[in-house]
Image (cartoon, rainbow, N blue to C red):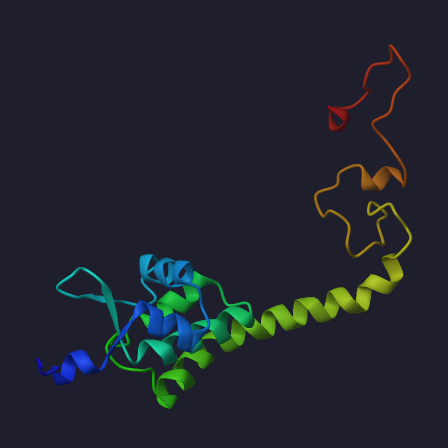
Length: 162
């Protein structure tokens, strides 16, 4: 029987990572391609992951569930060694990086929620007082309703109709 090296004993196969993380193989490959996780290659060119990848995957999943974009997750994970699990201190640092982004989104969604009741049913979204209107809507000043409909053969009188 060939002895297993201590380093090899700490490595996980793709199947083990899939079973323990609940993620599909395609997601592992995607995260690897994005630089979020790293794998070593066996003599047979099979991927082998350090055990710490499981916590790293958990961090990625939590961040994605809170709406953190992959780009921001990658930036936060970049300085961490890939061969060890992120620590509680690492998590504290990463979550601090994301806190302001999350608060800004919470504030935006709260404003939207609070303004939404006043707009339900108007159907226009061009009224000057509508907080959800298109801010670049140059025809809003002309009142509600369609503004670009013209009688057959009629020409537009001003540039904002072209």
